[in-house]
Length: 416
Ligand SMILES: *Cc1c(COP(=O)(O)O)cnc(C)c1O
Image 1 (tube, rainbow, N blue to C red):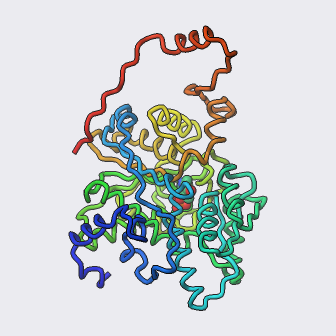
Image 2 (tube, rainbow, N blue to C red):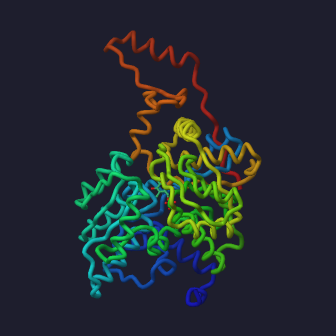
Image 3 (cartoon, rainbow, N blue to C red):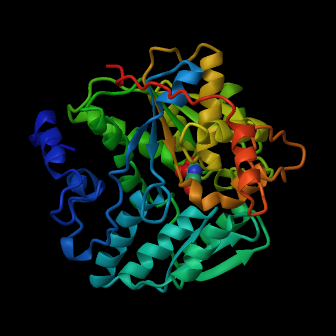
Protein backbone atom coordinates (compact mmCIF):
# COMPACT_ATOMS: atom_id res chain seq x y z
CA UNK A 1 0.00 0.00 0.00
CA UNK A 2 2.86 2.38 0.74
CA UNK A 3 4.21 1.95 -2.77
CA UNK A 4 0.76 2.52 -4.26
CA UNK A 5 0.34 5.72 -2.24
CA UNK A 6 3.14 7.33 -4.26
CA UNK A 7 0.47 7.98 -6.89
CA UNK A 8 -2.49 10.23 -6.04
CA UNK A 9 -6.10 9.04 -6.11
CA UNK A 10 -6.73 11.26 -9.12
CA UNK A 11 -3.75 9.81 -10.98
CA UNK A 12 -4.98 6.26 -10.35
CA UNK A 13 -8.41 7.16 -11.70
CA UNK A 14 -6.86 8.65 -14.81
CA UNK A 15 -4.64 5.61 -15.37
CA UNK A 16 -7.54 3.18 -14.94
CA UNK A 17 -9.75 5.27 -17.24
CA UNK A 18 -7.05 5.42 -19.91
CA UNK A 19 -6.75 1.64 -19.92
CA UNK A 20 -10.44 0.76 -19.54
CA UNK A 21 -11.57 -1.68 -22.24
CA UNK A 22 -8.68 -0.59 -24.44
CA UNK A 23 -6.81 -2.74 -26.91
CA UNK A 24 -3.35 -2.70 -25.32
CA UNK A 25 -2.95 -6.21 -23.93
CA UNK A 26 -3.55 -7.10 -21.07
CA UNK A 27 -5.00 -3.76 -19.94
CA UNK A 28 -8.32 -4.17 -21.75
CA UNK A 29 -9.19 -6.70 -19.05
CA UNK A 30 -11.02 -5.06 -16.17
CA UNK A 31 -8.75 -6.99 -13.82
CA UNK A 32 -5.36 -6.47 -15.47
CA UNK A 33 -6.15 -2.86 -16.26
CA UNK A 34 -5.78 -2.44 -12.51
CA UNK A 35 -2.83 -4.80 -12.18
CA UNK A 36 -0.83 -2.63 -9.76
CA UNK A 37 -3.67 -3.00 -7.26
CA UNK A 38 -4.26 -6.65 -8.04
CA UNK A 39 -1.06 -8.58 -8.70
CA UNK A 40 1.89 -6.38 -9.71
CA UNK A 41 4.28 -9.33 -9.44
CA UNK A 42 2.69 -11.26 -12.29
CA UNK A 43 4.61 -10.84 -15.52
CA UNK A 44 2.93 -10.33 -18.90
CA UNK A 45 4.03 -13.67 -20.35
CA UNK A 46 2.24 -15.60 -17.60
CA UNK A 47 -1.06 -13.76 -17.67
CA UNK A 48 -4.01 -15.95 -18.69
CA UNK A 49 -6.80 -13.52 -19.58
CA UNK A 50 -10.10 -13.81 -21.41
CA UNK A 51 -10.70 -10.07 -21.27
CA UNK A 52 -12.68 -10.47 -18.05
CA UNK A 53 -14.39 -7.56 -16.32
CA UNK A 54 -15.57 -4.43 -18.09
CA UNK A 55 -19.10 -5.82 -17.86
CA UNK A 56 -22.01 -3.50 -18.46
CA UNK A 57 -23.80 -1.71 -15.70
CA UNK A 58 -27.42 -2.12 -16.77
CA UNK A 59 -29.69 0.74 -15.81
CA UNK A 60 -32.75 -1.23 -14.66
CA UNK A 61 -34.96 1.79 -15.01
CA UNK A 62 -38.24 0.08 -15.71
CA UNK A 63 -37.83 -2.56 -13.04
CA UNK A 64 -36.52 -0.04 -10.52
CA UNK A 65 -39.34 2.40 -11.22
CA UNK A 66 -41.87 -0.37 -10.58
CA UNK A 67 -40.31 -0.86 -7.15
CA UNK A 68 -39.89 2.86 -6.47
CA UNK A 69 -36.10 2.95 -6.88
CA UNK A 70 -35.53 4.45 -10.33
CA UNK A 71 -31.77 4.80 -9.74
CA UNK A 72 -31.32 1.00 -9.85
CA UNK A 73 -28.40 -0.57 -11.70
CA UNK A 74 -27.52 -4.18 -12.26
CA UNK A 75 -23.85 -5.03 -12.63
CA UNK A 76 -23.85 -7.77 -15.24
CA UNK A 77 -20.92 -9.87 -14.03
CA UNK A 78 -22.35 -12.84 -15.90
CA UNK A 79 -21.59 -11.21 -19.27
CA UNK A 80 -18.17 -12.73 -19.12
CA UNK A 81 -16.13 -15.47 -20.76
CA UNK A 82 -17.55 -18.35 -18.70
CA UNK A 83 -20.77 -16.58 -17.69
CA UNK A 84 -20.14 -15.61 -14.07
CA UNK A 85 -18.10 -13.26 -11.89
CA UNK A 86 -15.76 -16.16 -11.10
CA UNK A 87 -13.65 -15.18 -14.12
CA UNK A 88 -12.46 -12.08 -12.24
CA UNK A 89 -10.68 -14.17 -9.64
CA UNK A 90 -9.70 -17.13 -11.79
CA UNK A 91 -7.60 -15.07 -14.19
CA UNK A 92 -5.39 -14.04 -11.27
CA UNK A 93 -5.16 -17.47 -9.71
CA UNK A 94 -4.30 -19.33 -12.90
CA UNK A 95 -1.83 -16.64 -14.02
CA UNK A 96 0.04 -16.73 -10.72
CA UNK A 97 0.11 -20.53 -10.71
CA UNK A 98 1.51 -20.51 -14.23
CA UNK A 99 4.23 -18.11 -13.18
CA UNK A 100 4.99 -20.16 -10.07
CA UNK A 101 5.27 -23.34 -12.17
CA UNK A 102 7.74 -21.58 -14.45
CA UNK A 103 9.75 -20.82 -11.32
CA UNK A 104 9.74 -24.46 -10.20
CA UNK A 105 6.48 -25.04 -8.28
CA UNK A 106 5.37 -28.66 -8.63
CA UNK A 107 1.62 -28.99 -9.24
CA UNK A 108 -0.20 -32.18 -10.26
CA UNK A 109 -3.41 -30.34 -10.96
CA UNK A 110 -5.38 -27.28 -9.91
CA UNK A 111 -8.55 -28.30 -8.12
CA UNK A 112 -11.74 -26.79 -6.78
CA UNK A 113 -15.04 -27.78 -5.24
CA UNK A 114 -17.83 -25.89 -6.92
CA UNK A 115 -21.53 -25.18 -7.21
CA UNK A 116 -20.92 -24.89 -10.95
CA UNK A 117 -19.41 -21.52 -11.78
CA UNK A 118 -15.98 -21.79 -10.14
CA UNK A 119 -15.45 -25.11 -11.90
CA UNK A 120 -16.45 -23.63 -15.25
CA UNK A 121 -14.02 -20.74 -14.80
CA UNK A 122 -11.16 -22.89 -13.53
CA UNK A 123 -11.60 -25.38 -16.37
CA UNK A 124 -11.59 -22.63 -19.01
CA UNK A 125 -8.58 -20.74 -17.66
CA UNK A 126 -6.73 -23.99 -16.99
CA UNK A 127 -7.37 -25.09 -20.58
CA UNK A 128 -6.24 -21.70 -21.89
CA UNK A 129 -2.99 -22.11 -19.95
CA UNK A 130 -2.57 -25.80 -20.76
CA UNK A 131 -2.73 -26.77 -17.09
CA UNK A 132 -4.46 -29.86 -15.64
CA UNK A 133 -7.71 -29.23 -13.75
CA UNK A 134 -9.81 -31.36 -11.39
CA UNK A 135 -13.29 -30.25 -10.30
CA UNK A 136 -15.42 -31.74 -7.53
CA UNK A 137 -19.14 -31.16 -8.06
CA UNK A 138 -22.20 -32.13 -6.04
CA UNK A 139 -23.81 -34.71 -8.34
CA UNK A 140 -27.13 -33.56 -9.79
CA UNK A 141 -27.09 -30.19 -8.03
CA UNK A 142 -25.82 -27.88 -10.78
CA UNK A 143 -27.26 -26.82 -14.12
CA UNK A 144 -26.57 -28.75 -17.32
CA UNK A 145 -24.71 -25.78 -18.82
CA UNK A 146 -22.46 -25.55 -15.78
CA UNK A 147 -21.74 -29.30 -15.86
CA UNK A 148 -20.88 -29.32 -19.56
CA UNK A 149 -18.42 -26.42 -19.34
CA UNK A 150 -15.59 -28.27 -17.49
CA UNK A 151 -16.38 -31.45 -19.45
CA UNK A 152 -15.86 -29.57 -22.71
CA UNK A 153 -12.63 -28.02 -21.44
CA UNK A 154 -11.17 -31.44 -20.70
CA UNK A 155 -11.03 -31.19 -16.91
CA UNK A 156 -11.33 -34.27 -14.72
CA UNK A 157 -14.95 -33.87 -13.59
CA UNK A 158 -15.89 -35.77 -10.44
CA UNK A 159 -19.56 -35.77 -9.49
CA UNK A 160 -19.73 -36.64 -5.79
CA UNK A 161 -22.86 -37.95 -4.16
CA UNK A 162 -22.95 -35.13 -1.61
CA UNK A 163 -23.60 -31.39 -1.42
CA UNK A 164 -21.14 -28.52 -1.96
CA UNK A 165 -20.05 -28.58 1.66
CA UNK A 166 -19.19 -32.27 1.31
CA UNK A 167 -17.10 -31.54 -1.81
CA UNK A 168 -15.37 -28.67 -0.02
CA UNK A 169 -14.31 -30.93 2.83
CA UNK A 170 -12.62 -33.35 0.45
CA UNK A 171 -10.94 -30.63 -1.59
CA UNK A 172 -9.47 -29.09 1.56
CA UNK A 173 -7.96 -32.44 2.50
CA UNK A 174 -6.59 -32.88 -1.03
CA UNK A 175 -4.90 -29.49 -0.69
CA UNK A 176 -3.58 -30.14 2.82
CA UNK A 177 -1.97 -33.38 1.66
CA UNK A 178 -0.57 -31.46 -1.32
CA UNK A 179 -2.18 -33.77 -3.87
CA UNK A 180 -3.60 -30.75 -5.73
CA UNK A 181 -3.31 -26.96 -5.76
CA UNK A 182 -6.43 -25.37 -4.24
CA UNK A 183 -8.43 -22.92 -6.36
CA UNK A 184 -11.35 -22.17 -4.04
CA UNK A 185 -11.87 -18.64 -2.80
CA UNK A 186 -10.09 -19.47 0.46
CA UNK A 187 -7.18 -18.88 -1.86
CA UNK A 188 -6.60 -15.13 -1.58
CA UNK A 189 -5.52 -14.90 -5.24
CA UNK A 190 -9.16 -15.21 -6.24
CA UNK A 191 -10.19 -12.38 -3.94
CA UNK A 192 -7.50 -10.09 -5.40
CA UNK A 193 -9.15 -10.37 -8.80
CA UNK A 194 -12.75 -10.29 -7.58
CA UNK A 195 -12.23 -7.07 -5.66
CA UNK A 196 -11.98 -5.21 -8.98
CA UNK A 197 -15.77 -5.38 -9.28
CA UNK A 198 -16.00 -2.73 -6.55
CA UNK A 199 -13.52 -0.49 -8.34
CA UNK A 200 -15.20 -1.00 -11.69
CA UNK A 201 -18.67 -0.09 -10.38
CA UNK A 202 -17.37 3.18 -8.95
CA UNK A 203 -15.44 3.85 -12.15
CA UNK A 204 -18.59 3.31 -14.23
CA UNK A 205 -20.29 6.04 -12.17
CA UNK A 206 -17.43 8.43 -12.98
CA UNK A 207 -15.88 7.60 -9.62
CA UNK A 208 -18.99 8.26 -7.57
CA UNK A 209 -19.96 5.81 -4.85
CA UNK A 210 -23.49 4.33 -4.96
CA UNK A 211 -25.56 4.22 -1.78
CA UNK A 212 -26.18 0.48 -1.71
CA UNK A 213 -24.66 -2.68 -3.13
CA UNK A 214 -26.77 -5.83 -3.02
CA UNK A 215 -24.76 -9.03 -3.32
CA UNK A 216 -26.13 -12.57 -3.69
CA UNK A 217 -23.82 -14.67 -1.53
CA UNK A 218 -23.05 -18.26 -0.63
CA UNK A 219 -19.51 -19.13 0.35
CA UNK A 220 -19.04 -15.41 1.09
CA UNK A 221 -15.72 -14.91 -0.69
CA UNK A 222 -17.20 -12.25 -2.92
CA UNK A 223 -18.50 -10.22 0.02
CA UNK A 224 -14.99 -10.00 1.38
CA UNK A 225 -13.64 -9.19 -2.09
CA UNK A 226 -16.09 -6.33 -2.47
CA UNK A 227 -15.03 -4.88 0.86
CA UNK A 228 -11.35 -5.26 -0.05
CA UNK A 229 -11.96 -3.22 -3.21
CA UNK A 230 -13.74 -0.41 -1.39
CA UNK A 231 -11.16 -0.34 1.40
CA UNK A 232 -8.35 -0.02 -1.07
CA UNK A 233 -10.07 2.79 -2.96
CA UNK A 234 -10.58 4.70 0.28
CA UNK A 235 -7.04 4.21 1.49
CA UNK A 236 -5.65 5.34 -1.84
CA UNK A 237 -7.77 8.46 -2.06
CA UNK A 238 -10.09 7.38 -4.88
CA UNK A 239 -13.27 7.56 -2.78
CA UNK A 240 -14.12 9.29 0.47
CA UNK A 241 -17.08 7.23 1.64
CA UNK A 242 -18.40 3.68 1.53
CA UNK A 243 -21.65 2.31 0.14
CA UNK A 244 -23.79 0.14 2.39
CA UNK A 245 -23.78 -3.58 1.74
CA UNK A 246 -26.81 -5.86 1.67
CA UNK A 247 -25.80 -9.51 1.58
CA UNK A 248 -28.59 -11.56 -0.02
CA UNK A 249 -28.96 -15.23 0.89
CA UNK A 250 -31.37 -17.94 -0.16
CA UNK A 251 -33.69 -18.76 2.74
CA UNK A 252 -32.80 -22.43 2.19
CA UNK A 253 -29.08 -21.74 2.70
CA UNK A 254 -28.94 -18.86 5.14
CA UNK A 255 -26.30 -19.39 7.85
CA UNK A 256 -25.06 -15.79 7.68
CA UNK A 257 -28.60 -14.42 7.78
CA UNK A 258 -29.36 -16.44 10.92
CA UNK A 259 -26.14 -15.46 12.68
CA UNK A 260 -26.02 -11.77 11.77
CA UNK A 261 -29.65 -11.06 12.60
CA UNK A 262 -29.31 -12.87 15.95
CA UNK A 263 -26.50 -10.45 16.77
CA UNK A 264 -23.86 -13.17 16.51
CA UNK A 265 -20.51 -12.49 14.94
CA UNK A 266 -19.72 -16.13 14.38
CA UNK A 267 -21.53 -18.20 11.77
CA UNK A 268 -22.76 -21.67 12.69
CA UNK A 269 -22.96 -24.08 9.77
CA UNK A 270 -26.40 -25.25 8.68
CA UNK A 271 -27.36 -28.08 6.34
CA UNK A 272 -28.28 -26.21 3.17
CA UNK A 273 -31.61 -27.27 1.71
CA UNK A 274 -32.13 -27.47 -2.05
CA UNK A 275 -32.68 -24.08 -3.64
CA UNK A 276 -33.23 -22.94 -7.22
CA UNK A 277 -30.31 -20.58 -6.51
CA UNK A 278 -28.05 -23.64 -6.70
CA UNK A 279 -24.75 -21.71 -6.82
CA UNK A 280 -25.41 -20.41 -3.31
CA UNK A 281 -26.67 -23.67 -1.79
CA UNK A 282 -23.93 -23.60 0.84
CA UNK A 283 -24.42 -24.31 4.54
CA UNK A 284 -20.88 -23.91 5.83
CA UNK A 285 -19.43 -20.80 4.17
CA UNK A 286 -15.65 -20.89 4.27
CA UNK A 287 -15.25 -17.10 4.13
CA UNK A 288 -17.81 -16.29 6.84
CA UNK A 289 -15.33 -14.52 9.19
CA UNK A 290 -14.18 -12.25 6.34
CA UNK A 291 -17.79 -11.53 5.36
CA UNK A 292 -18.54 -10.47 8.94
CA UNK A 293 -15.70 -7.95 8.66
CA UNK A 294 -17.18 -6.69 5.38
CA UNK A 295 -20.58 -6.25 7.02
CA UNK A 296 -19.02 -4.37 9.90
CA UNK A 297 -16.95 -2.18 7.59
CA UNK A 298 -19.77 -1.37 5.16
CA UNK A 299 -22.58 -0.85 7.69
CA UNK A 300 -24.08 -3.98 6.21
CA UNK A 301 -27.25 -5.97 6.59
CA UNK A 302 -28.21 -9.52 5.65
CA UNK A 303 -31.57 -10.39 4.14
CA UNK A 304 -32.93 -13.58 2.63
CA UNK A 305 -35.33 -14.60 -0.12
CA UNK A 306 -37.60 -17.64 -0.32
CA UNK A 307 -38.00 -19.82 -3.41
CA UNK A 308 -41.29 -18.09 -4.22
CA UNK A 309 -39.77 -14.64 -3.79
CA UNK A 310 -36.83 -15.40 -6.05
CA UNK A 311 -39.10 -16.89 -8.73
CA UNK A 312 -41.36 -13.84 -8.66
CA UNK A 313 -38.42 -11.45 -8.85
CA UNK A 314 -36.79 -13.31 -11.75
CA UNK A 315 -40.01 -13.44 -13.76
CA UNK A 316 -40.73 -9.79 -13.12
CA UNK A 317 -37.18 -8.70 -13.96
CA UNK A 318 -37.22 -10.72 -17.16
CA UNK A 319 -40.40 -8.93 -18.18
CA UNK A 320 -38.42 -5.67 -18.04
CA UNK A 321 -35.64 -6.92 -20.30
CA UNK A 322 -33.25 -8.63 -17.91
CA UNK A 323 -32.55 -12.34 -18.13
CA UNK A 324 -32.05 -12.98 -14.53
CA UNK A 325 -30.20 -15.98 -13.07
CA UNK A 326 -31.76 -17.33 -9.86
CA UNK A 327 -28.99 -15.82 -7.68
CA UNK A 328 -29.45 -12.37 -9.15
CA UNK A 329 -33.14 -12.93 -8.47
CA UNK A 330 -32.32 -13.49 -4.79
CA UNK A 331 -30.63 -10.08 -4.85
CA UNK A 332 -33.59 -8.41 -6.53
CA UNK A 333 -36.09 -10.07 -4.17
CA UNK A 334 -34.05 -8.79 -1.24
CA UNK A 335 -34.05 -5.32 -2.79
CA UNK A 336 -37.83 -5.39 -2.95
CA UNK A 337 -38.06 -6.35 0.73
CA UNK A 338 -35.67 -3.61 1.77
CA UNK A 339 -37.61 -1.02 -0.23
CA UNK A 340 -40.89 -2.17 1.30
CA UNK A 341 -39.36 -1.92 4.77
CA UNK A 342 -38.08 1.59 4.05
CA UNK A 343 -34.43 0.60 4.51
CA UNK A 344 -33.69 1.50 0.90
CA UNK A 345 -35.49 4.65 -0.26
CA UNK A 346 -36.51 6.07 -3.61
CA UNK A 347 -33.63 8.53 -3.76
CA UNK A 348 -30.95 5.87 -3.18
CA UNK A 349 -28.62 4.81 -5.95
CA UNK A 350 -28.61 1.02 -5.76
CA UNK A 351 -26.43 -1.54 -7.53
CA UNK A 352 -27.49 -5.17 -7.52
CA UNK A 353 -24.69 -7.46 -8.55
CA UNK A 354 -25.77 -10.03 -11.12
CA UNK A 355 -23.43 -12.90 -10.38
CA UNK A 356 -24.11 -15.12 -13.39
CA UNK A 357 -25.66 -15.16 -16.83
CA UNK A 358 -29.28 -16.29 -17.02
CA UNK A 359 -28.43 -18.42 -20.06
CA UNK A 360 -26.65 -20.88 -17.76
CA UNK A 361 -29.94 -21.59 -15.96
CA UNK A 362 -32.29 -22.73 -18.70
CA UNK A 363 -33.77 -25.46 -16.47
CA UNK A 364 -34.79 -22.80 -13.95
CA UNK A 365 -36.46 -20.65 -16.60
CA UNK A 366 -38.10 -23.57 -18.39
CA UNK A 367 -39.50 -25.16 -15.25
CA UNK A 368 -41.01 -21.82 -14.24
CA UNK A 369 -42.66 -21.13 -17.57
CA UNK A 370 -43.82 -24.75 -17.92
CA UNK A 371 -45.24 -24.67 -14.34
CA UNK A 372 -42.98 -27.52 -13.25
CA UNK A 373 -42.07 -26.10 -9.84
CA UNK A 374 -44.15 -28.07 -7.31
CA UNK A 375 -45.57 -25.90 -4.55
CA UNK A 376 -44.60 -22.63 -6.22
CA UNK A 377 -46.90 -20.12 -7.84
CA UNK A 378 -45.88 -19.48 -11.45
CA UNK A 379 -48.54 -16.95 -12.36
CA UNK A 380 -46.17 -14.80 -14.44
CA UNK A 381 -45.45 -17.74 -16.74
CA UNK A 382 -45.51 -17.22 -20.48
CA UNK A 383 -45.39 -20.62 -22.20
CA UNK A 384 -45.11 -20.96 -25.95
CA UNK A 385 -48.39 -21.59 -27.73
CA UNK A 386 -48.39 -24.42 -30.27
CA UNK A 387 -50.59 -23.73 -33.31
CA UNK A 388 -51.28 -25.30 -36.69
CA UNK A 389 -49.79 -23.35 -39.65
CA UNK A 390 -53.05 -21.48 -40.14
CA UNK A 391 -53.07 -17.73 -40.83
CA UNK A 392 -56.37 -17.07 -39.10
CA UNK A 393 -55.37 -18.94 -35.97
CA UNK A 394 -52.19 -16.85 -35.82
CA UNK A 395 -54.19 -13.65 -36.18
CA UNK A 396 -56.57 -14.80 -33.45
CA UNK A 397 -53.68 -15.50 -31.12
CA UNK A 398 -52.21 -12.02 -31.68
CA UNK A 399 -55.58 -10.34 -31.15
CA UNK A 400 -56.28 -12.39 -28.06
CA UNK A 401 -53.04 -11.27 -26.46
CA UNK A 402 -52.79 -7.67 -27.70
CA UNK A 403 -56.28 -6.29 -27.92
CA UNK A 404 -55.24 -2.65 -27.46
CA UNK A 405 -52.48 -0.58 -29.08
CA UNK A 406 -49.07 -0.61 -27.41
CA UNK A 407 -47.83 2.26 -25.30
CA UNK A 408 -44.06 2.42 -24.82
CA UNK A 409 -42.68 3.25 -21.41
CA UNK A 410 -40.78 6.52 -21.57
CA UNK A 411 -37.19 6.37 -20.39
CA UNK A 412 -35.90 9.43 -18.58
CA UNK A 413 -32.16 10.07 -18.32
CA UNK A 414 -30.54 8.53 -15.22
CA UNK A 415 -30.82 10.67 -12.10
CA UNK A 416 -27.69 12.42 -10.92
C1 LIG B 1 -20.14 -18.24 -6.64
C2 LIG B 1 -21.46 -17.65 -6.87
C3 LIG B 1 -22.13 -16.90 -5.89
C4 LIG B 1 -21.65 -16.77 -4.49
O1 LIG B 1 -20.41 -16.16 -4.33
P1 LIG B 1 -19.65 -16.40 -2.97
O2 LIG B 1 -18.35 -15.73 -3.12
O3 LIG B 1 -19.52 -17.89 -2.81
O4 LIG B 1 -20.50 -15.84 -1.87
C5 LIG B 1 -23.33 -16.29 -6.23
N1 LIG B 1 -23.87 -16.44 -7.44
C6 LIG B 1 -23.27 -17.17 -8.39
C7 LIG B 1 -23.94 -17.29 -9.71
C8 LIG B 1 -22.05 -17.79 -8.15
O5 LIG B 1 -21.48 -18.52 -9.11
